[in-house]
Length: 272
Ligand SMILES: [Zn+2]
Image: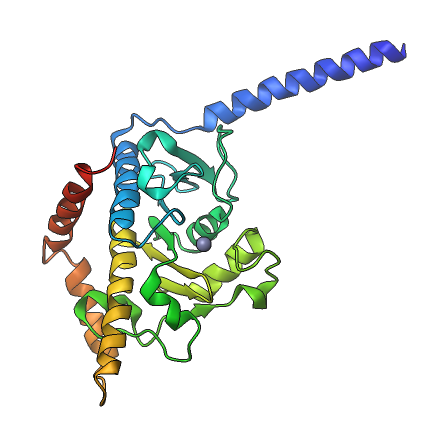
């Protein structure tokens, strides 16, 4: 009798496993969908572009929200950004759980999941250890908007300190709670600096999140140079930043697309 119960239990376990797998497979998105394929390509290109520009090294990551299902996003398996192709991208839900994929992912995937959960308008996220921004994550000096390409910094990018939110493994964002706290610190902005770690950027598209990551790095360098010159630095006013945001996002220029095509061509020849 006992053997019979064990056999029935094993059968139930095996069946639930099969159905569980079937459910998971059913949820996976169709990657031949042109809108999804375009996002996957932008994520792969964004990884290589950021590596080529030295914003990412062996670490860091780029993700994009699924255009066919806002409750999932795509990001590479655990791999150096300069090597990422579309075949390496895993689909995740907003709990940072893979959808029908058992490949190993990045430990800090909660950064992405929680920003997507908190900000429905965000379609792309980048996390990097961008070198020029690091001083601003440990200094009282705020990283502020002072050129047109850095309009999104406003009157100062917020700084997140993981040790103030229960981090137990250095400064890693390796739990949903830390991801949520980071997204709260980012608020409705487009960049959050991370003390002793790096930064995370968001955008209305993958391309914009990548461009903001690059322009945050450039802005940090410009600010340090301007301060080093001595004298008063003329930062962008709130009105000027608002006006610049309208110009950058309003479709009055094709500069963003032109720039993306250039960046893409730069990495296309050099990396697999
Ligand atoms: Zn990191």
